[in-house]
Length: 319
Length: 319
Image 1 (cartoon, rainbow over the protein chains, first blue to last red):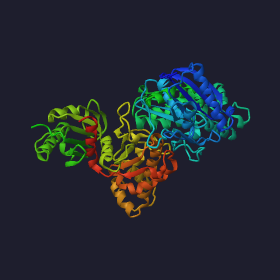
Image 2 (cartoon, chains in turn blue, cyan; image 1 turned 60 degrees about the vertical axis):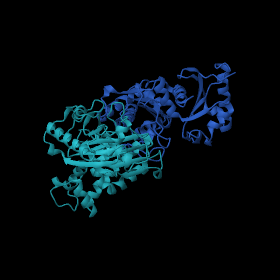
Image 3 (cartoon, each protein chain N blue to C red; image 1 turned 90 degrees about the vertical axis):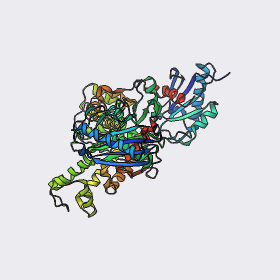
């Protein structure tokens, strides 16, 4: 039976969940699956589990016809062209792993590797909140802050295939030490872990909050709930994160004259609380457009974004 | 006599000087001229003078054969595609001026308009300090801070044809009010006027300096001379400007994964004094490359850069 030229496989390997999908050329999701990464156990057993899940995808919804190609999204430091995950802090044991070759041989279809935030950005551009804007940036607010840049409808890779490291753009008015050891990175205040750390500092300073639990247990989900009840701590932290994003975006818009910024990832659940800070700072500093010419919006696709983005990657590479 | 397909005219209209040249397709300068803008008098008389100078260029060195096309560089706010200078603060009376149509009709050759800093960047890419690097940014340190961004060997224009407004990228650790009225713009500390203002503040605070003249007369040329004699004020201001540039470049490199940054314009005379600040901050914050993979260099072409860049613009537009 020949391969099905009209379907692709997509895989997004995260530290918490592994998402996979059988998709159409335009990113239409035929089947979507997600399982906890911890189910996989070690590196080899996780890969074996992924191979089994992907095979089931095309044997089930794919009616036994192999998809044309596979796109793999991975976090951490990757060598995109060689298809190697060099190091992924959130994936224990993933070091110099030639994931593209492994999956391609196991499934007998071509495979490509891409940074997970880049796939996310491609998804939001193709079918999500950034649809129709060919010059745009997507931020993914998670444990860290990732990003993907679309220029003229294509993913921007840069000279050293590591562009859109927006989480480590330094902000002169941020004094915090980032997980990377540098001072003032956007990630240190706008990531989920950064926002939780800011909230814990607020509590340690004895400032008022509705939160009564152990500071160690604070996360952005709890803060989102508290913000809805008017908690001054959560509102202030979301505002601060928003302003930091606003400063970063002002620089990016003034440099590139973009049309849109999409805020995605788990932390974007607090978008409505962050937006006033983002827009306040951005509107004060943008010189390349008026605010009504551009869009700053919450992502629309959540964890399906990288799966949908896989179609954009594969078609742009000629599959 | 047919037009000479192998030559172009280039014009760079500045607030201080008007530069023009007859150039080859690769940016080779056949003739270069410069005269003070003030010689032109009002708008109409300046344009008439420019037309005469350009005509002389091809009647002289061009041996009477018309060049194929003209590229015009202008400061301020332009509508590139329509060929209109909307407003140029340093060119009295230039308002909604359809300069492309005027010059094209007067000379009877096609003409294109471009931002002067963009032409400068194209020149440094084609024949200057950024030669061979297809992903690079050029800063022009003058009365303001301009810039031009080259991506994949082409000028990046962006969605609203006003990209690379690097002078107005906000820096959170800069407290000064920019000429544009915004707070914290790079331009407020790294432009020639910004550096002079920082020096005047230093004097007003009663801090030590070798400068004995009237603070009003201070400019970057005087500071450059003073720095060579170890003046603590000039050295500190150049360092501060360098650090601000370093913060901005760190964000730009982390966003775009570029290969090179070229520092040009009159203020780049102080490059050797600014470089330690630039490199110190950049090396601390860059995550997309190691410092030995990238170049941060002084521009090589000075006021000939926009003239040479005209060739890159015209050939990229099919002339």
